[in-house]
Length: 357
Length: 271
Ligand SMILES: Cc1cc2nc3c(=O)[nH]c(=O)nc-3n(C[C@H](O)[C@H](O)[C@H](O)COP(=O)(O)OP(=O)(O)OC[C@H]3O[C@@H](n4cnc5c(N)ncnc54)[C@H](O)[C@@H]3O)c2cc1C
Ligand code: SF4
Ligand code: SF4
Ligand code: FES
Image (cartoon, rainbow over the protein chains, first blue to last red):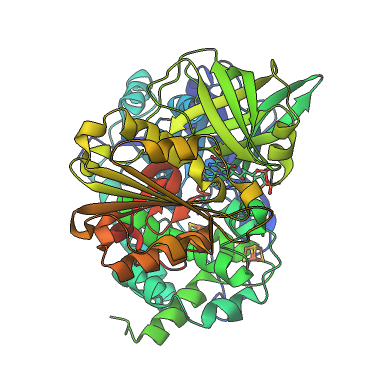
């Protein structure tokens, strides 16, 4: 195991000053309370966090998010709408408070934008210019089901630095060369962590896993290894139609999802010139698959809802060996039609005759 | 920085009127553009969008590229209004072409419908230029009416070539048409080829591809000997935007030409 260091609460600002020299920092801020009313959600925290630009002079209180933020991590790498011209002026960004669900999603986004026929230069540049400072989850929302996707609520890879919140400070560890360099630069702020603190972190990790598993069990989520089979065998299931009846085609599930990546190339007029732009697209939109002459293989809403699941639980496992869902539950929180991915998967699995193990 | 979304410019050098709704554009790209037969390009006109089209010209000719385009909507209607000398944008080529190496020593049946003959013309040029490698080329083409036949001058010429057999049909005969009348499937009989040593290549509207494929299977073609050009909505052409998914494939990346064996079990492939 790489060495673990200790960052006390008093040294938090020194840590930010160290980062601030090279990066624009984004920090979690509390934005309100929405929460999902749910019979299993009693007593779970409802506060929402979002990432905000850190300006050292303005922020009085420092918050560390106990669970993921409302915006998906992808918003740092592709934008709802962006010009596809030059990437030269991209700033260097340090994001604090990324959770393991979002780190998992980054693998999917990396596959899409970095691998394949060509790698996307815009994504690549932003990826290189970003420092990811992740953190262990110390609580979870009603909609969280990372463990159901076999993703732990604490990061083990894919970060530059990871912070594990202990009651009076953090354990800090590096997971990359970039992280290593920061630890090196800040050796006077981070002493090596004591064995006591390290075992406290283990206890906290075990504790959150236990609580979260109990919560997810209430939802009866089918096991990860059955999901591909469930969506394929359920192709003709009436469940798609039942669920899609309520869909209002807002695309919120797609836009809030940290693994959804579809986009549309289009153009905008800037003065007299036309420039290429990229827009996030949503497979729940009616014209997503429409071709010339009006033919549309995803003509009906139920076909588009089903498409979303087939893409996540069949296409991605076939192509990457991973499901394209990290269990962040953002699509559940955002859907005005209350279409809940956990319910859809559970219903399909029951219909398929798959018992929970 | 190499920007894969940035088109290169191409000048329209000539425009050939094929039918009232189909034109062939001869384009000269600012940089040489080499493609394999069956690959496609993204063609754009500023302010009118971008769309996937398959070059219909001979891939050996590098400095010019021809595309045969049917006027069906926004972009294509604008393209049909272009004059010689105007400039369009091109990205690509993208996708995988026809697997010519698998056609060596075979009888090659080519079935086209409507503007679907465009990519097939490029394939024919490739085959004709190395005809000693192949046994025989059998072309079966269907258009809606005599007026809708593309490459009208070329078809009879191709039919006179050695080891090449061409039959054309129209859905509805008009005027002094003395040729075959009926869907393309009606001319898929008594084919002058050895089915056990043949491959079939089909391109056309989805419904035509569906019934042609069923007919070919009836005739004894094996799944693995049938190649289909799948049309899907496309945006990026690079396997990234997600629009063209077909089962576990992206049509732009893994196609547009597919071996039927690989896609036959995917739901709703003809929709
Ligand atoms: C691999 C491939 C090769 C093709 N080759 C040819 C060819 O050689 N000749 C030819 O005439 N046609 C070809 N087509 C079809 C051609 O791409 C469409 O006819 C054309 O994109 C229609 O554009 P439009 O704006 O005129 O039509 P509209 O119906 O007005 O289209 C409106 C919008 O729908 C979307 N759209 C419609 N059809 C498609 C499509 N097929 N793919 C992506 N988006 C679409 C676009 O976003 C477009 O802006 C090919 C299609 C594919 C997938
Ligand atoms: S499908 Fe829903 S739960 Fe899964 S990653 Fe996307 S937003 Fe999160
Ligand atoms: S968030 Fe809900 S209502 Fe909106 S498109 Fe997705 S499924 Fe439909
Ligand atoms: S067209 Fe974008 S993935 Fe195929």
